[in-house]
Length: 340
Ligand code: SAH
Image 1 (tube, rainbow, N blue to C red):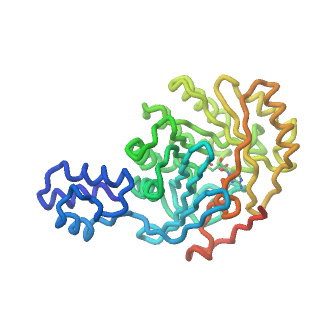
Image 2: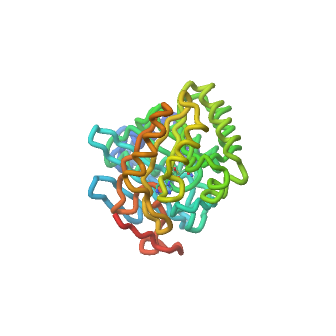
């Protein structure tokens, strides 16, 4: 819901200031429509229904994976596709993966989003409305900004949306923003944010030449500078940074690559998350044995490391697979194939 439009609409009608708060309270707790807002006069509910769309996003399609993961494709009012994912875990964790942009202007070679056309930055309301959609299905307790787009290319709207997450039920400690290392936005996040929102860095190779090949953004913002900025975050917030590392067979997954990663990272500042590659038609994923051997090198170097659980691969909802396919929207791009 566009909260600025809500406030404007209410004040133009001479409504008291608490009305906007009342509406937001209902919305943030998962109310499905204005009709349920029984603390508002009926006439006001119908005025709002006419002038303030309940969501800034229109639902296009929704699919549920065998593992319970739900992927939803939305469309903005000006026609841009946006995907978001709800991950359900057995321990009760309900994690929502939010998109910060429609498409992505960066062109990481292993990521499907980079191959679709870049649309635009999303507004804070459009980001929040993804989370609210799932909040209407059930309670949620974690948020990751790991959907389409680079959050730090859209830092103002991303942070504005994050400020509202506690009202939906997600604390800053359970909120994670993931970046390729887009330095201007990362610097602002480190300097300006005073809540304990977590930081994740998509690293994928400690070797500058290989990293540039996989992620062209590395030419613009070299890894040493990005790692230095992460250390400033650790210093100021007293929390470790998560490192994301996609395991690509024969590309970045040898013990030599693991040693280079271990040499780059201070074990007191970083935790590594090894991500099995989800097929996007370009690379081969590392074999389980290669992932274990890689992890063993990190273990010996005392770098905390885990292997990420893959979710929603059967519905192209897993990391790196978000890209509105032609079947689902009018955007032009190659379909993402899944071998899972
Ligand atoms: N642009 C930000 C936010 C997206 S996060 C970032 O890159 O950090 C999406 C995560 O999924 C990133 O860590 C990304 O590197 C990873 N990813 C991308 N493509 C993938 C794939 N095909 N398989 C597994 N993980 C992938």
